Image (cartoon, rainbow, N blue to C red; front, side, top):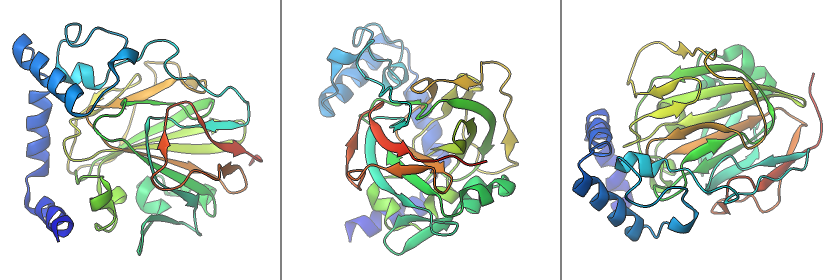
Length: 287
């Protein structure tokens, strides 16, 4: 009952307005305020401060700076096996499996299509029919930087305006088409094994998404899909390179073509992941 009420409440909340308010609060520079927010958050969510690169809270100008914190060198080991696909984030597996025709599993009784997810990149849909995908949820307490799960070249990126529903388990299991309704940043890669996609999915209270190529992208509820300029940063990425970060918690989705990747057997819903650990193995290539 409470779960259903939470989802229903989101329909009437001013989601973009609330997210804008959180964006401003997270960027307050008053030392007492930002230190209080950082220390209370770290205590409430038992954040491992030993692995944080900077001193907490003093070296962070705002709460958001802490939220998108960098880790010390060596805090995450990147699996260097050439055939290994690694987790792009710290997070929890929502679902990983096969794309059935062009349908992706969201939750029991709920599916959505690759075409809905990619929006305007409809010519790319055929590449992923009967492929595989993985959806990984980042809770607010997770390390929130997103890294390349494989080596390749970033050939295109699209910002798709949309809604800002929560992407927690309660909402995912009850709201149809959640990932195609929310705003997202779609990154297309060309790799040695063929094409691949990584998608940042926005959510309630995610004030923005940032990448080294685009800078900060603020949420838009509607409008045209933007083809983003990639000329400001090298587009060749090694496995483990930084792709961007969420300014608050959200979800990433990986799409792979058919016959290319086999997910690890333990990549099941609820499995906790650390960025850089193997989650799958390349088994083939596409043309």
